[in-house]
Image (tube, rainbow, N blue to C red; front, side, top):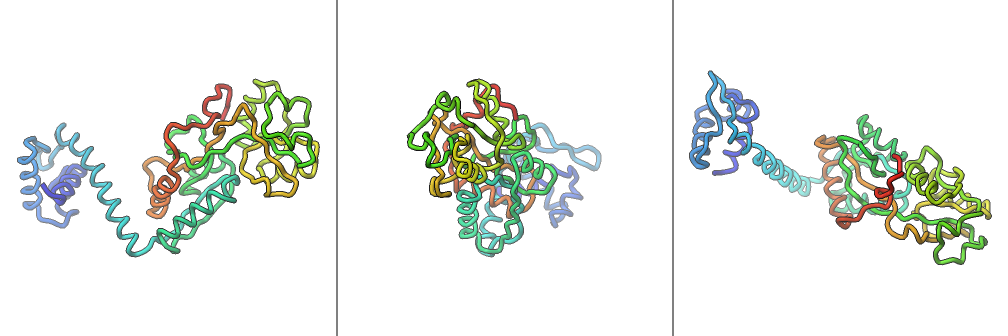
Length: 310
């Protein structure tokens, strides 16, 4: 058995016609027939049966084909990858992304990708909400997206990239600013603000706020705006994701919330199932998984919250 026989088999299984298969393989029909015959002898089963001038794959052949297609796809991917290393990757990758990873994770990922594959790639980056990113994937606007995970979304593969926790953000002059940690109970009586309704995170947090009995106004769409808000309105306490350093804005301080000291929210790389937008996008998907190496078994607290609505 050799690799050529397997490629010949895959093509014949696809078209179920010796003449068409041999034409597409650029070999003679007798050569194809002999190759398949030798393969059947080696395996000890009939892979095809004659139906008039055509052939029909047998049950044995169908099962064999499932495994062979997977194996040959991996072979093709490995060969293409080596060619890319030698010639350099080129093309455009259209990326949808939430704002929270644009200051740190995403630049590091894309820079590392360029270092491995060269400067021939053009990144077309569009900032959007999680809802907008997933819609962009479905509409063909984006090749990949970095965003939250929507429940009950069919045909989308999500690969975890980075986790984010929930904190409060206050001005350095606020009485909570010197605390190492706060509880949700500690926040009662303060002027609380969080994300607006159009934000994916707000949908997650509403269930949490309801359960603990906190009244939280809508005040911002992203963490940069939240930091600006609390520094400008020093009595305000923002409930937000920890995507900013305390040094990001003079006077801004973030404090962990003890009830949610585990990862609260996960940013995923999302792409359509079984749809290859481009070779460059395929390589970014594979590279991102290797670059991140997100630990197995870790889920966001949001995924365990029964009252969360996406």
